[in-house]
Image: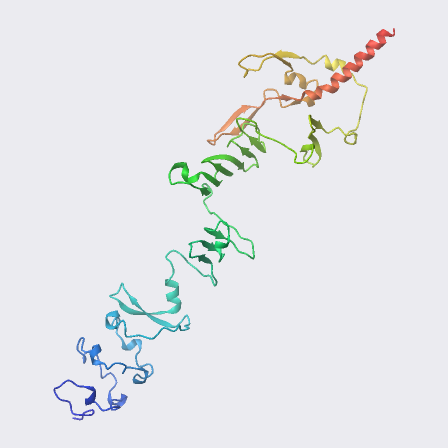
Length: 390
């Protein structure tokens, strides 16, 4: 029987028993070393001379995945201090392999591609395909999304946007619920939503809340409701509900025009002007807007058809008498003076979504009676003059 180097004795084999360079690949038959030939735990760190296992001792591709049984090497087989000095960063490709310790499989070492490691190393619930910084969290815990310097802004706790393009925030809900932005000063009751901006998808309305209550609503008809969330009039565009004065109009630097009333064609039909002491309510009367002008018509006969009355309003608990007209009685004489129909009603949907019916009361513009009064006085004056000259 031949021996490699010195003839072995019963004493443990040492490095001096093997001549340098005598162990070569041709001295070991293929598959000569198997797990059956090596007893459990027979090779320990004390059997290897420090620093003697290096790349020159291993043939190219000598250690392959096929040579290592599944789960054969775990972190218990490696001294944590064995791999040292490897502090320099190394550029790797997505298909390069790395070894990791699988704590769910007895700490066995598993191989994984760099791309797979990157995909599985994110925060649970967050998926990212960004090729640049999408979110920044500063040392002061300010958050920027699409912005890398959130601490540069006045409100810096959360900054969303892009400096070179349009930006926005979308709140996605179902078509029957609300999307909300809340301003809170506590964690209970209305403290959680002292102020808010809310879109009601089911009701089709944008709500603004103050002190935990909706005070302004813009609904899907374009009606702006202030101080209330329901209207008591027929499809208004602005509805203001308040306990005191509801609207103040003040010119900034001078007296003059303060409000205009414009028809569907864009023409001004009326206006309100103020000066130091007076308010003028004017309706359009320009000659360029009129045709078929007639100065000879009987005013006295029509005036005698009017029925001035004395009455009190039902809502007046004091039953105070006042002078005036009944709207539908005037409409037969001066139709343009009256708005609405006798005993008119309208339907509306209440806050509970139930369709209701309510009266739609007539109204009267007394200024429309002025031409009739003036013309009657002129006719009376003419008759008086005629009688005086008879």
